[in-house]
Length: 122
Image 1 (tube, rainbow, N blue to C red):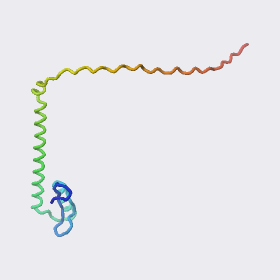
Image 2: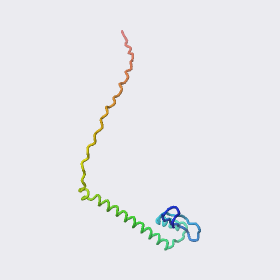
Image 3: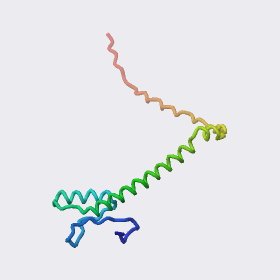
Image 4: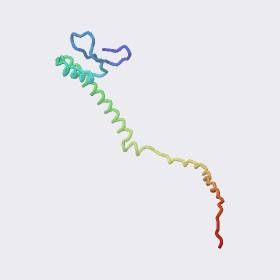
């Protein structure tokens, strides 16, 4: 089932004979999990046709993801192979002029408190 808001496939999980579906799921995997949860709660069976369709979609999704990952791994290996890394000419980086050092701020001298000392004379 296609939703009105986007081009993503949405799975509706429902009990046969009820008008309203129990839930809408964004992926076949989540739909299968919810179907088994309903089966556990209600004791009703899940049709073999539904299980096979969900299983097939999950399998296709995993295969597509595996292909994407494999493609990214191959690109990474190609760009980071020893031959490519050694073949790249790297120029030494020009030293950046160092900023002038600012003179360190010195502490203000502590104010000397004048204190009166009392000396006892004998």
